[in-house]
Image (cartoon, rainbow, N blue to C red; front, side, top):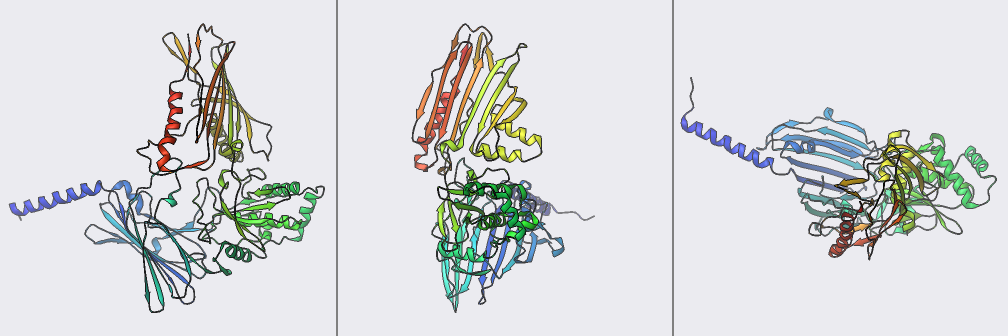
Length: 621
């Protein structure tokens, strides 16, 4: 029998220890993107070719999900798969992906029943760590609206060691560029070609801080936009006006309605001469007879489907539904503006110095004699002339036949976001606490509730009721809407049920903690790294009445408080009426951008409120 010598066994043992040591070391190191390379070439016929190569090292089982690859593209693009393989720690190829292993599907969104983006996906999982996955693909386009919207970041929590963008264009090809300060740029000219190179890394630490700017504003980014567009029709990004003119020409002819639809519209408005009422009726008709589908505005195409497409199919994306609404108004002589906007509750800011496609949504602006009406055409739940948290107070591009310009949408004011809650607590004859609550919701609370009302699921509605109550453990018995109207910018809800016992007993003492308004939980100043961005105000008032049927010989009511400052206001008052104790609490946080240097003062203001709430209680003996 063959036997290992002592020295050979020692060497083998040492190699094993080394492997285990390395394995243990990698288990404690985050996975990382070794390379994220993008190469873009514009040929002499203005065709764009993008080659993407990615290499990711996966160090432990907990990050194995990084080996699931999803590549987004559009039917308008020519997509071709390059290669994909798994490489071990010593550089050996363990497995290769073949084209038959790829799966392509539609990218479905929770907000739509159809979406035109495509996802090509495959898996490169392995069971021994560390291992590296590498893949590449190519996208070719004849029509495009930007050269690159690039970042080295693949995953917000995974470092990128090396990210690079190369743009290779003819020498006379005009571009406009915007880049963040953490990107290194070089340029070279070879023969009749210009080669632009950007390099950046990413440490994998994007802070998820409350009320902070969006991730896009905290990572390296390069934007490269062609000055001359050839997408559907020729155009220019020389200015916002020229870009708007191009959008207008791109969508020319899409706002024509079939004759049968014009007859329907005439019947709808036959007894009204007031322009605002006409707009309202047509908007309600849109809401009641169409449905939203999601077609991505950047990759999926900027040209709208025509109005007659929506008439026939009764659905459309934001572009098509807005075009349809615009067409209905045009047919009755009311002018409106197709308006592109970057929507979202925490949207990235528009770079006003870089005209071009920076938008993800379309709304309609209808200037009337007294005021401008704003129409969100994708929502069946929002009221007439309501933009809300999704599109308030930001730049938008109003596209006109003669002139296009950047405008700012109206901002939500304190009354627009006021949430009012009125609680009444009483003991029944069985010594069980009962509660009647009246809620008046506005702002984001109103929007969430209106959206839930459209759903058939009773549980979804109940979840929103409980969320609005703000009382953990409240058992809702009944709830109903009061004075509800489709065009109201608030909703009033009456709720009855069994609350958790508000009274705690400590020896002979009874204690009630009456303050229910929650204060945002901000990071300590020594941990905060980003500015605070309060996009729209927070405005809440609570009234709470406790009816005390038991004999209360001695009731100690706390002193109220009023705190006012540059950031908002907090106030509480208490008083007793016979056997009832009534508390009124108010909290306002103003819309504001707070620089990191100012953050300690802002934090101190909020902390003083929190400290007061912690130490405030009604004492009953």
